[in-house]
Image (cartoon, rainbow, N blue to C red; front, side, top):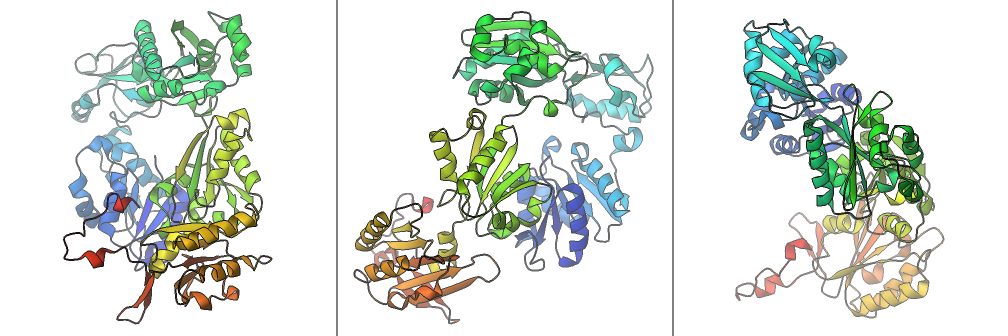
Length: 614
């Protein structure tokens, strides 16, 4: 389940929202006009709530149930896809699950009511009567025919009895523990089995996820070949794909596309084991291989991985099968498996840019990545800027100047199978840590395990974008960025780039303009630019963008004073075409014309190709 969004429309509900966010691991979203300090702020409740609903985010709204229903009503189409939606009275007295009752809303409502000492107004008939929802089995179980659950539940509510048969009689404790009335002659059949086949008429067929498919492959084996072998293996074993709990392999294959393609095809996680863990299964292998041992350090990958996942009480249901470049084997556990603690997942590294720091300038994708991470790695200030989004995470704080150690640590943590967010300010790919991630990969600067992680980069609002937006539109025409720090770039190279940009008449955004020890570089850039553009060229000085103490100044180039600039300032120097304009309210704006106005009325003002992509 995604991180719940706790919605408030005024600060009077904030104390209650804080309790709910802490209890549920949620994120507070508040109306910008009345909740200025909310971690995530929105201008209009309707569009924001609809966007959260479309994204599948659980919604816990401290607002009137009727208003919430009217906002979401146009989006209601498929009850199987609806996330939990809960209305909570602002005094905490009532909690009403409105949607997604069988997808967590009822349980969330009960949790909320217990926390607040109020009433959970659960109205789902099956939950009230039987303490179970037949169309929403617990983790480890899948229902083959959910379309038949409604008439079965209706029959039970009308007084019919149920009977357990197949594996359900022995394994489905969640059914036996419910308040459903059972008898050997019950009219509603609840059947459980891993065996392939359609459900009998009138029966609900449950699949215990107790099977594990072990996969071995040559490097870069075709994914379609692996999927074909996996399907053939299940068919030969006579089992349903819905009974699969996981796909397993050796950790050397943690980044193998074929293995992940099989897992994605069946909608199950991929889990990985070390060679030593697989070799411990050697006595149980049906087809041990000395050749495989020489290559991997274990006598069997497909069989060994499947057996390692099902545990000592499990057994090999189908020995290794092979086609061309892929092998597969099938093992079965006596009970449905909880695989999250078996082996390890492929580690994920989220390389995220959080913008200047405020939640309103942070993208939803970045927030989702941080929420999905177990570990956060970054400069302490950047982690602090995440606010409540960092709650419950393992923090790995680093000082400035420890960039390589910071990135290597994040990659090695992900190499252990964790989900790690490497947190950068601005955009992670602009003078930040994303480039170092790929440099360490390129130069083999990390362990083999860290090289097999999944890397995902998400953009953030960069300092130059923030400064430009605050000032108007200084980047409306060709521009470039130059870092004036000579810690990593020779000063001669920087000087050459400044001269080239000056001669090319680019708008220039200067990063790292000064430091405590470095005061001459910006002065050089100013003097060099004055050789090519007018003395009154507008210069934007933007400090602490999006944070407390934000300051924006516009000065002419010849009046640029180095003492007015610090380490947290972005300097944007206009081109010879950059202008200032004063609005009716007296505010001064900076813009660099693209030439649209000059073409107005000539029939030549067509939008250039890809203008919106810039």
